[in-house]
Length: 422
Image 1 (tube, one colour):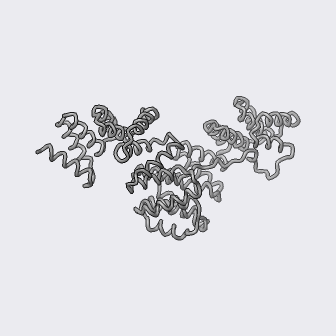
Image 2: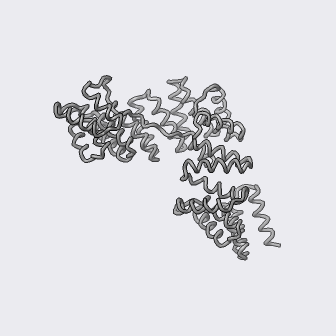
Image 3: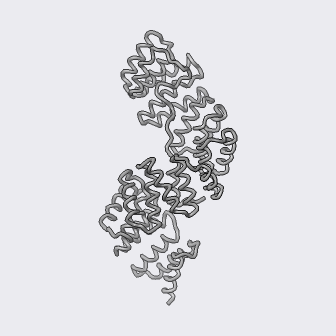
């Protein structure tokens, strides 16, 4: 299924970020920690790693075989950046508990708190060697692989982890979400059927089933599930309702669902963008621009917003100065990235402002990345303005070959070809 810019942004919306799922100081299976390690745990929870290290070292002087102190000292060293000291502690720990991965989970958690996800991945991959069947390690590492875009690895780990711990709802939901990300809808649906058979009242799983059905094009079935969940006020429910409405062409229902999301989370960036896209489709350009601008203030690195605003400020709300600023900023941030939509929008700005050499340059860059009917048509227009009529005609013919519909663009291409024949 080919996702448009609109669906990609919506897709961002309903695949939320996943919490790391491991609590500092509490990775152990034992329900009650020894009282002497509680101050160490409290220091770690306050992110006072130096204090935690001193306290743990004192405990180890009294009892070198205190596995809790070893684990928390390793976590404290991760917190203060003494990575080189951790391997020794890991060896000592494994001598005491050969297949126990709790120390690895504790260190990985600290790395995540310190925003060092790659170090967390490394330590968890080591943990896998120690115990390949540790569900806690498999699940946390899967979350990291998911965030890292390593979806197939994440899927493999989740499947293995669920064989060890079949009732973990969070892992089930994450597995289905990742399968949706990689367009494996049938497999996602197979898992959902199994999961719902064991837990038929799980609302989160039902919402996911509606999403999968929507992406499979089974919109009526998805709608039935949405209706059956009437009264649910979860963010994921409204996101899914908006998805089904969008794919069904019901912009009003999608709009209302987005409004409900903003009541739950007023700063939800994907929802703000999706509302902007709806206003754009309705031709309400000022509202669309306002929301796109709001999104850029929250995150100036969302590349697809730039071409949207450049076109709006070129064609619908002429603001050449703002368009120029956006072009400059976009080229600084993304000039080395292959983005045909961005280059085409920049070319269109220059074309509309009579700078045909610059326009042709950016249209050519866009076409080099991805030839499509619109970009080729724009190249033809630009070459016409430069007096290169034969080259323009070739571009119009090429654009026609890339056009798969009889819509307005195809009609425009035919008009230009007819003019050249006359």
